[in-house]
Length: 183
Image 1: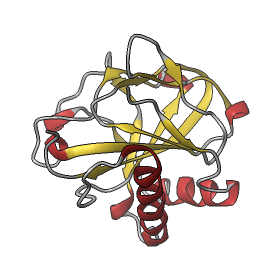
Image 2: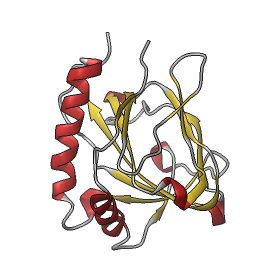
Image 3: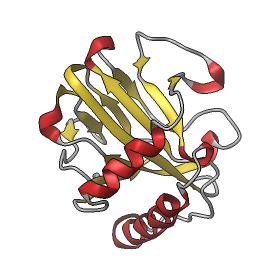
Image 4: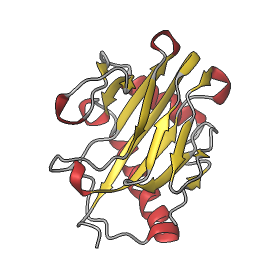
């Protein structure tokens, strides 16, 4: 069984603010699905890709270290690269921001090679209501740690969702580690 792995203090509050500021340094894009499809019944959020934001290099350096540690301690997957940029998402109550049940493995060239997903909680839990990251690695739903700066890692094939935000706003950062196909 693949249970979620948590790194409770992956980023400190000041670093979380820096990441949110980087994401907000240019207009955010409407979050889509794979292959530029949009369905607001499935996903409603605003996005920034960190590789498009100047000054975000330090974030990727930290991500590499965190993913290597988690993979060594919990997963032992064959990982070879980060083929996609880190994605910062804003889920706002004004749109009931959410992302329904899905897995992160998709049909695209990079998405088909996603093996490990890391989601970092950038907002303080008291800054919003709803917006829980829930995972279903088996028949039981598990909620991710909501502590600010906490990273939750799980195999990219695990079903997960973000429940609707009903007050405030939730910011998170997601990255995928890629590698050869599972065997």
